[in-house]
Image 1 (spheres, rainbow, N blue to C red):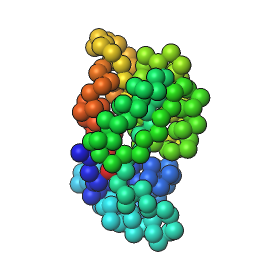
Image 2 (image 1 turned 180 degrees about the vertical axis):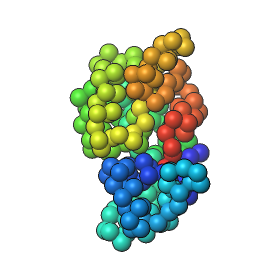
Image 3 (image 1 turned 120 degrees about the vertical axis):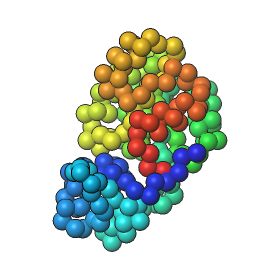
Image 4 (image 1 turned 135 degrees about the vertical axis):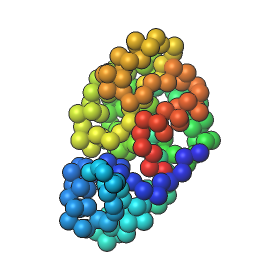
Length: 192
């Protein structure tokens, strides 16, 4: 099960606050947001308790952070398959799951729910997964979102090609909830 982290990166804080990572760095460097630097590195870490305090001080909504729900956008042109996968994910943790069945709906849903992770079925004919991945990578509001391709069996070359195209991970057994969650945990610094 995915649990809330005690310490967050500037990228994670940026996604929670819906700002650019550079903005979080400025908050940190000016002393507005408390945290610490990793020894021997320029990387910064912010304790979750400090972030919640900062957000409350600045009247920023903290419901999602305090609830501890990971937002997942699941894109699959087959509604029944999507519902089954969503149900399987719900059984493993506390997630907010949005479903989309074509590229247009996926774009609208991504803007609406600002997901932490997007799962996209590469075999769906109504979905241009590569364009969708490019859209996410070009959208500043979604720049910290993890995009995971769900597919059937692939060769190592095909998997590497998908990673080079911008996908954060590839799961070749889209029915295996544990592999999907492991991919999210590995490829995206889990907030919740």
